Amino acid sequence: MSSQTPFLFLFLIFMTQMVNSAPDNTNLVYKGCAQQTLQDPNGVYSSALSAIFGTLIQQSSKAKFFKTTSGTGSATISGLFQCRGDLSNLECYNCVSRLPILMDKLCGKTVAARLQLLGCYMLYEVAGFAQISGMELLYKTCGSSNGGGGFEERRDSAFSALESGIGNGNGNGGFYTTSYESLYVLGQCQGDLGGEDCGECVKSAVQRAEVECGGSTSGQIYLHRCFVSYSYYPNGMPNPKKSSSSSASSSSDSSYSSSSDSSYSSPSSSSSSGTDSNTGKTVAIILGGAAGVGFLVIFVLFAKNAAKKHDDY
Image (spheres, helix red, strand yellow):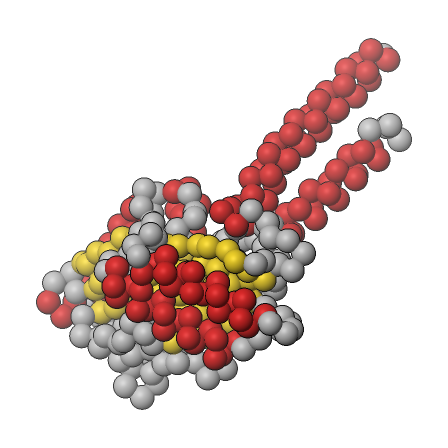
């Protein structure tokens, strides 16, 4: 056996563990599918929807939020996407480009659909689909562990800092993060929401988190027009500026109202256990660099082995 074989074996194990531990912005958080099937005998709606998807994917390589419409009259379809504010243009594109296929797989052809991945979401609605309140709860997830005595007070202080930052217009396109005593919190509003409305939406989401998640050390609350996320790091936080929202590790349905097919419904069983670990974009950068160096090392080793065998003949 070559002397390099044990090294290669250990390196491959190391790389596998890093890949498995790296967060994936394309993990499914929840889906919302209208119950009413899209009736489209002439393919008019399908054509408009394809145009919507094409435009949104194209724009995702250069913007974090984009909204568009396609079709005419009753066949008009509106759609939008939004990426989490700390994603790069490439990360945003990679996230958004997955959504149309997933929508078709998970929802089929319906009059409206919304799909939330960890790093982005997309929605579309056929003309006439009733609008709902921006404060409507779509999905929640709360961590299973409890922060113990005094935790809720620290969490509420972190939330206050988040509300103040968003409310004062400090958010970058409606995206804002802050930290307080080992707590990392994040908030984001839909890209076309005004500053005052964004502040009100985040405030409502924070109140939901306090009630729904109680003393849980992590959680995410998704409302129609905004969401908040928080994570607790009792042993010290990673770099918060390069962390991403971390609480959602499982997915849930967020169905449209089955009675009227005209609005989102608040899921009655949408909470799930989340993880408190968050490596964010830092790990992704390290992983990419390690993989590049690793493959270079492997190539050099194999080249040396091949040269050695050639010299032995």
